[in-house]
Length: 381
Image (cartoon, rainbow, N blue to C red; front, side, top):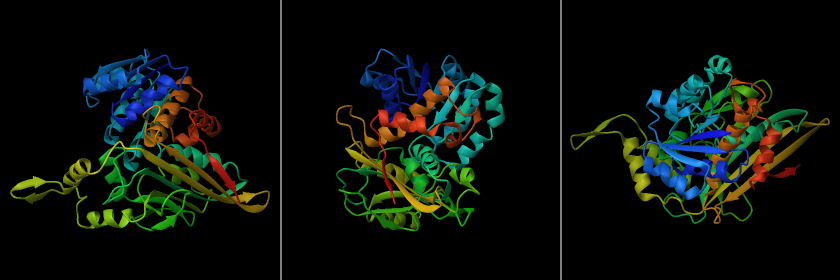
């Protein structure tokens, strides 16, 4: 099969690596970026004869359609605001498309293309990274272990192995995506109804063996399409981001001061958007690309053989020194690569613009994760 990877950043590198070295059915990979040197650098780093690099600015609609043709699937590893137009281009080129997502509003626009995608005989699957992404399929996987599911609670975080003040955090994906998660409303199910919750709220503590004190708090995007999928089927569904203790209060202070606002202000006769300034400062002052962990926890409550049972899934992934891939690259880019391959093979439950938890077989997906040494520890109570 032939796969196109759009974007040659951290996640693009992770996707290309997985396609080249973990995916025997893939025989051709094209990595595209507006900066050809970056695309070529990814090809050189991954070092496989399967890979070719091209220059492509995804904002050029016609050139993007042309680049897509001849491939079986495309993976978007560019910023989320491109994903609707890229979905339209994929329909026109008649190839399957998935992306790393991260914005509820864009994902809804993509899912509205269901009829067009069905007519083209393809899959459009948004939000296929980590969270949103992998955890949606894990949620469906765990829910099916019960006769009747009542609650699903999802906790996910990317953490530096050597946290540094002031935020004890490092940049492991787009700074725009990070800010977006922290300022947009979180969508959950509470009391059987879909509700929106303010981000950076409902702080809680949690523990993983071998880790210092951790916290989790409401953020946007992590539930993706799960509220609609599970509406009427359970009482409680939520998602919180995991950080080292103290992070939430510090970042929320910056939000409260207006530093994440997109409204222009004038300073020294110059118009600026505080969010852009903060993003630039975060990129300049926070560490990046140092060894990391990804922590994932899903907790399920439901009925099984007439009794109330609790099930917990834990995943702890870490920087892979052998490949040079961060835990965030492995747990974000690898799931998108797996989904791109599943759709390219046509091994899906339905065609169209569809949430991944409905289109992708959860057992097969979990088996593919395990083959990449991303394994679930499960605990029944």
